[in-house]
Structures are given as structure tokens and as C-alpha cells.
Length: 248
Length: 179
Image 1 (cartoon, chains in turn yellow, red):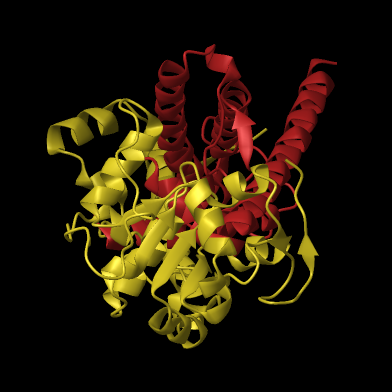
Image 2 (cartoon, chains in turn orange, green):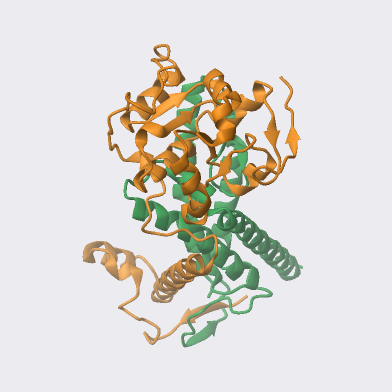
């Protein structure tokens, strides 16, 4: 078995050697405690790691840029993270039978309510969402349901007649969703329910492009509560007519 | 006899190291692809760690990390810059493991359940996992990376080392940090 010992300093590229960044005292002690060949080998490994890091980072950002699913680096994908309080509307277009009241104290629902309130958003519970769904105005387009999940989940089953609107790729959906939202008097947005905050992001995105805040209602229970309550879902595209009843 | 035993040990170690290199490469490639194909899901998971406040930084991490893992996976599979890549794996794996551990502790205290019963999607690329299994897995990956860093697994490499320096062989037999 042979040990390879590096000779000379031909391969030392001081500009890129990561260890050269160490303080002189630490570096000197480290160097003195190592055989010269070993020190060079260590340095070479770190140099190689630095190269892998730089080339890998360039590759990664380039791949993200080229990928059709790539992220836009400058976009804020979570607008709900920024507290931009907007007064909760109580006037026209916000019927008192729909706007929720305070949920019980010390519950996850209360935390959600506080969060929605901070965003200036209103919410509806399962009973109210079902009421709106069965309201004749839904068929007339005065009430709209917006599904804020991704395309795959939407196609697996959504509230019948709900529009697809993935807030992480809003540009894909504006053309179909905005006319529906502009025509509607009440817009119910939902995602999975529970910890999911995609419906909030969708609501804020729609608000940012000019949809009136008082029209927007978050269905906090989401599709999970909807199916648990035994309400029907539609498979495939919007108004596909392929309805499936869910068991209570 | 001792020489042949030593040679056999070395061959066995090298074989296992090559297998470990391929396994690490395949795992990083698979996990990286899983994340790169669902970048928004990965972005949401990264966000749960509360690492950074800036959306630009958060997006950059979520955008670059999966592809960087793919890059490292490919390098390991092909056997290019193996030791430099092993350093990068350790640099990624150690902080990831600490973060996952801290998050699991938080979940454990919130749910008041045994530590090993904690199960969540850590954003590692293979969905929900039990924390103890994940920590063991990461420990194995770190040890394997350390093994590659020590210079093993150089068989069947396209180019084990990127930098070619003038070298001469020393028949003394000690092989710390072989080049």
C-alpha cells in the first residue's frame, strides 16, 4: 500500500484555499501539527469542496431557472406572512349571516381567527359554506368558490363548480378566475383546512389584484371538513359533471 | 499471510465504500428530484423551520437546495470530486440533522408524545418519517460521507480527484488521507 505525498507547492492556489481564511495563529498551529504532505492533501480536499460548492450552486440556480416548475426568487409566496391589516368589512356585500363571530377561546380555531383578523380576512365555517353552496345565487354566479390547492389535488376532487386557483402560480389562473371573482358578490376560498394557509395566500393575492376585500371569505375547514360532512365533490375539471358523494 | 489478509481487508473496504458512494449518490439524487419536482411543497416545508425572514433567501434555499443535492448525487454516482463532494454532504447533513432534531423536540413537547413516536415531513424528500429513523439514517449518511472523505471508494470513479498535483509515491504504507 502506498502513500501518496504531494511535493512542492504547485497545486496551492491561495486565492481559493478555504483554510487560508483561518486566523494566522490557528493556521500556523494546524500547519505545524501536520506533515507538509498531509496539510497539502487537506487543503486540496477543501479546495475541491469549494469548487463543488460554487459549480453546484451555479448548476442549481440555472436548473431552477430553466425548470418549468422553478421558483421565482423575488416573489413573496407567502403574502399572509406579512401583517398588512385591512379593516374587516362589515358593510354592503358582507352579509351578517355569513361573517363569523369569535370562536371559543384557547382553541386552534381562535388562533386561526386571530391570524385571519390580522390579515383583514373574514371566514366561514362548514355550515355556512354548505349554505352558500346550496344558495341559488351560487348557480347564478353571485357566489363563487375558489380552490386554492394545487392542480393534482383539485383534479382529485373539489367542491363542485369551484374554480382552480393555485396561489403559487397565480399567473396561470388569473384569466379564468378574475372574471368569476369580479362577477361574484361573495367569494369562498378553501384549501385542505387545518394548518393549510394556501386559501389565505390566495385571498391576499386576489385582494392585491383588485378584488374587494369584503367579498373574500376563507372556509377554514377546507376540503377535509367538506368531505367529512358528506358533501359532494367534483372530479376532474370545473363543471365536469363527474360528481362523487362522500360518506359521512 | 498477513499481507494477503491486509490486501483482502483493503479490497473489502474499498468495495463497501464504492457501494456506500453509489447508495449515497442514489439517495441524494432521489431526494433531490423529489424536491425539485415539487418545489412549492418543499418551499412550504423549509418555511416551517423559520430559518430566514427574507422571502428572497427562503426562495433561494428552496430553489437551489434540491438541485444542489441532485448535483452532488450525480458526482458521487459518477465518482467525480468524491472527497470534495463528501465535505459538502457533511456540511449539509450536520446542520439539517440538528434542525430536524430541534423541530422534532418542539413537536414532541407540543404533542406530549414519546420522542421516537414523532412523525413529520422534515422536507428531506421522502415524505413523513419517524424521527428516530431519520436521525439514524442521517447518522449513517454522515459516517458514509466521512468514509469517502477519508479516501475510500475510489474504484470505478470517473475522476476521483479534480486537482492534479505533482505527486510521488512513498512506499511506507501509512495511508492517512490518501490522495
